[in-house]
Length: 266
Image (cartoon, rainbow, N blue to C red; front, side, top):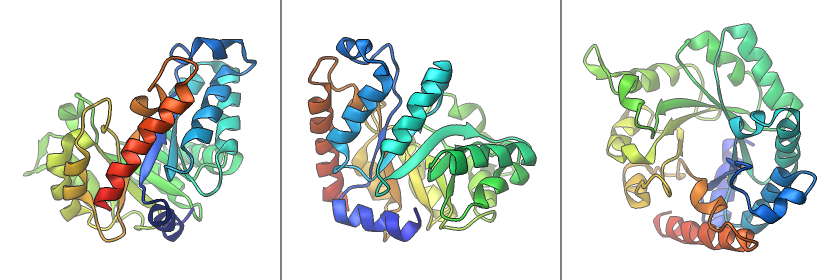
């Protein structure tokens, strides 16, 4: 999916919501556990309930890899079930020497039909470039994340600037606004306006709204650009809105609340 197509979906749905399918088999409703593939059954119901309210789905691969072959099969079935009108993100946080990153890129962009993959920039340009060589695909590079440990490195002062600022400045030169995004956490909304000075036209994937308590209003105030430029990721607050048999219905209600709030700011 290219940028124009993504922006058109945002305009059409009045939503930049990204639903995170971080599906933990220990947290899905008990009645699904008798299904031959309970994780896919859960994901399928969530997708059916929310597909008109969001423009993207983010699959955190760790929750699937932890289940071995069955988990990988559930992930593949899930990403293939998601329609092409949705932006499909593999939240895999890959990043390795060039020839290894090239294989990761082939795995998620060719073997699997993801549109984007999250990438750690620590090893430098040659670890990120292979993800930028695939037409219509995106690398979403970790910039300023929403976790507590972000302060360990990302907010370290290096030569008069934060390390995350150096990352945004440098990585922005490796790709374009059509194949490169950044992760900027909603719990760091105060830094969003500063990030916009460094990467003013790139899309940002913004986790941290919902269960982590980030402010939607602040995110839009500090981070929105002309064509939106934001994908607001919400995972637990949507997919685990209910532990019962009404889980999909409650997930829809939760997603609808987020979509309505987003529409007010678009």
